[in-house]
Amino acid sequence: MATVTARPEAAGEQPPPRRRLAWPRGSRLGRLIIALNVLALVIVVIGALVLNELRSGLVNARIDSLSTQGQLIAKVIDELATVGVPEPELDPVAASQILQVLFIQHSQRARLFDAHGKVLADSFVVADRVDWKVLPPAHKPGEAQQGPRQSPAEQAKAERAQKALADEIAQAMKGRTVAGTRISEDGERLVSVSIPIQHVRAVLGVLTLEAGDVDEIIAAERKALLPFIIVAMIAILISSVLLHRLIAMPVLRLARAADHVRLQGARAISLPDLSRRHDELGDLSRSLEDMTHSLSERMDAIERFAADVAHEIKNPLTSIRSAVETLDIVSDPAARARLLAILQSDVNRLDRLVTDISNASRLDAELSREPPRTLDLNRLLTEVTSLYDAQLRPGDAPGSVRVRLSLADPGHPAQILARETPIGQVFRNLIDNARSFSPADGEVRVSLSRARGRLIAAVEDDGPGIPPDNLETIFERFYTSRPKGRAFGGNSGLGLSIARQIIEAHGGLIHAENRKDAAGAVIGARFVVDLPDSRA
Figure (cartoon, helix red, strand yellow):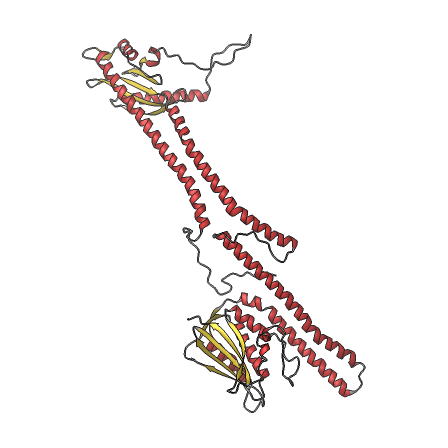
């Protein structure tokens, strides 16, 4: 079994339009995937936004606190530690005492600079703060002792910190308060506020307050973000597990079932039971079940067809072999002529069988290869019947059967969605079958009418009719029933079977019935083709 694929442009069709991105309205699974992943993302975004706002608020609150405290200290220093008239200046001793008296939190540092940027007082010094750090390993006896050295990176970091402090003091010397964050010599993030100490309009110095708990605030923020991260990870994990169970595992089971058929050559595929699901995988499972059932039926039909072909071909071959074996031992010219006639008849019968079998075997491929188009059935029947009329000329063919067409509404097109070549083959088969059963100088009548949104085409003859028990079996493959006096082997028995297969592929129906007169006697046969009207 082969699958034929073709580009739409090659078949005369327009390429399918590109699908734009859109919300999966009819996809429950798609909505579930999007909702779960968006939920996890929203949790993280909300947590980040909330904590960023909290961080900004804490830093601003610390700046406001340091500014209020610094303005108070600067006012006190201006009032109590300013000496000199008319050129005032700060008294370092008084300013140092003021810093010692005023309460400075352990996490804060206050430094006082004069008008030239020189340090006059440092809260770490007046408060007897002791800085500590881990000592390097002890030297072994005899080793030269060397002072602590800083790496180039540490020296560069310290220089950048000193420059940042100097820039902040220089801006405060211009008479404005400077607030913000910067990095200290130890690499610690600081919230710093530099307030100018002014006596009237003269800037006597700068008071700098620093809070070194910014890293602690950031660590606390990160710790506060941890629950959001955990919730987001749990949501993503749950969504991943659901996607795995709802999509990955069923698809894997479907793939394993297909591999089982491929590796073991099984006729039918045992699919996992997903038909109860009302999503895309449920639709896929049901489609695969229908597809495998259809393929299994087609394989059974192919096997039956092959068996029927072998049986039908075997009969003329047996007859040919018997005639050939007898021909060598028969000396009578008349008998030899009869044997040669039998051989000729069997060869013709075998040729018809091979031709019809070839057409039947290619039918599925032709139906799938040719796309359906809008077809005017009035025009098609006119062309088909005109071919039979063209073969007959008055006086040249005595005893020939004529074909007459009758259209109920020839002025309006009878449109169907079909493939022209197979539909034309259906009516040629029906007309040929009717002609073969019609008496000499008889007539085959073809008609077309409309009824309840359907197009009804009928082919009638004046033959002996069809036995009531065979009205359905005549559509089976290789079925032939001939009246007495008809030549055996004149038909292959595939014409009506092919006709039904083509009509059903186009969503139509075909059946046979007997024509009867007023007394109920059979006066001929009628084949009725029912096709959907594309305009209905």
